[in-house]
Image (cartoon, rainbow, N blue to C red):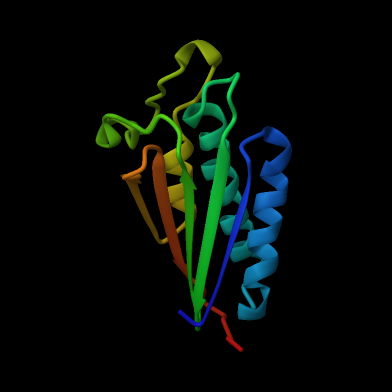
Length: 144
């Protein structure tokens, strides 16, 4: 990859906007369109929100790690946690499936991420938790 960065922060709601804005700022040298920036910010928000809601018990908030790699017009974003993980990833990727229906969750988080990015990969983290890898080719990138 041409450029990369990694950040870690507490899995709390106040940090969702921080995460989306840091990723957006990092990819600005690639000259993404406004729509591409919006898509990426939305996908990052969904991924981080999923960690906050599902990865850690409410009384014990862990960390979110975001890694971003860029090259030319390609962006790869990994959102990683060390929480409870997902036992049935295939089922979790199904639109409208939620493990918390009593909390009025829509079950559309992964579907939203997938619709705004070119590729979505969800896998269990070998150290517990989950790794969500999202990638996108930017149409108007100029690279530095």
